[in-house]
Length: 122
Image (cartoon, rainbow, N blue to C red; front, side, top):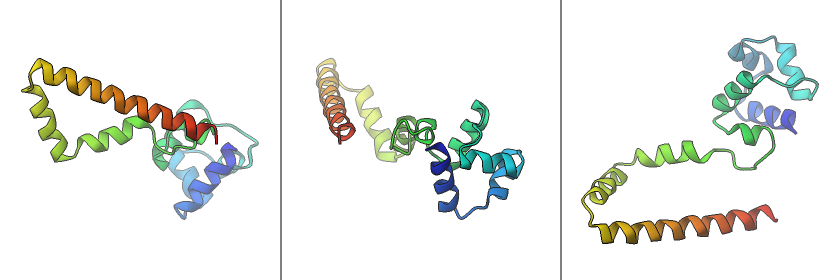
């Protein structure tokens, strides 16, 4: 499974095994063995692969079908200028408004959790 994902991601970027091996600082034959499932990368190489393809390590290992981890998605979200304005508004909010916002956020998280649970059972 890992090898298949690696092969798919590489071809998606229209790269050769040689290109990937050079980027990782390993022999092409070593990289080829990763794709063939005959060898597994060490942790550092696994992390380099995830970073290069902009996917999570869990995605590479087949533990999830979500390509991106939540951390990278939230970093992109925070970069939005409107969001920065919202955070400024939150800083100035009354304790009552903050409590209401907290309850709303918990509702959103609960709703997302239920959606993910349903997706996992498919």
